[in-house]
Amino acid sequence: MSQEQTPSMQGAVCPLPLPHTERIVMGHGSGGKMTHDLVKRLFLPALDNPALRQGDDAARILLPEGGRLAVSVDAHVVAPLFFPGGDIGRLAVCGTVNDIAMLGAQPRYLTAGFILEEGLEIDTLQQIVASMQQAALEAGVQIIAGDTKVVQKGKADGLYITTSGFGVIPPGVQPHGANAQPGDVVIVSGTLGDHAVAVLAARNELGLETAVQSDVAPLNHLVAKLIQAVPDPVQIHVLRDPTRGGLGTTLNEIARQSQVCIQIQEKLLPVKPAVQAACEMLGFDPLYLANEGKLVAIVEEQAASQVLMAMRSSPLGQDAAIIGKILPAPAGRVVLQTPLGVTRIIDMLAGEILPRIC
Image 1 (cartoon, rainbow, N blue to C red):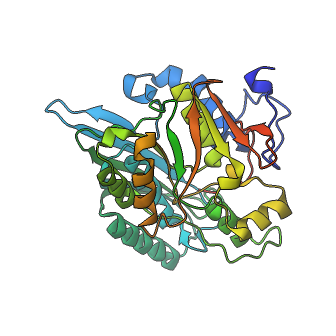
Image 2 (tube, rainbow, N blue to C red):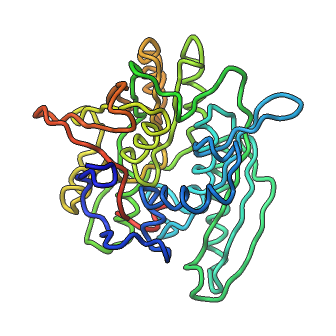
């Protein structure tokens, strides 16, 4: 059976009856297989260059005078604009800060672009901008430039925000999606799916009532603690934040970049009981739900205990857990071991579970 035909059990998603090669559909924004296919088929051939080809959530730039710069950009279209634990402004800042941090970089500066819908209340915009500034203060970054556009009522659903980020990569720090090696340990910094369930509950569409709050938070200080905790920063091989498409899709990205097999244990996955209950009620798999304040670290086995302890010493990593390991084969695969001893293939998210999540 080919890779494209591999069965998965990721829960309810929008169906894929057609290849969708002629028009954009919602699944192209899922962060899963359709997103990756679109990037590979359309964007990479047209824009190909060494920095883009790296395949991480941020690019490394070698400066002529020495040193390395991390650069990233994110567009945010979450609905509703406010949700338990956060809002689109906090999400915009944290999302870009976190992509920069996943290269081990120290985020320094952001820019922000706003598309405002005619009729948006000024008070709403003020609250969102204040939230952005608070998140920037938490992360220790400055928003140094921006742009604003207004479109007619009905053309933007309130507000969209695009943020770009810039950070400095310290010497000797080099996490990269292609660096996972057999024998490495897979660690996740906390519970899965909190953000997705919080946003879904805020929509009041499916009768879901829950106290779960979004985990949206800047992770750069946590990353700095991990780097300081190990004898040599090169022992941290991969850092990635599992946002759209969830942990399952993120691990597939890493497995394909590194050409290794990632084996995880279902019983070790940290999931809040309320999130698990929501998944069982709605037919979702927490492996494919978005997170906005979690990271996955793939590290040398000798460094795993130090990294885990450093995570758990932070408020953002108290529920951190070792969930698996890296195997040499089958290359490019992610497999899950169930408590019954059954091996289940975890593929990339195929369609769209929850549109407008970030």
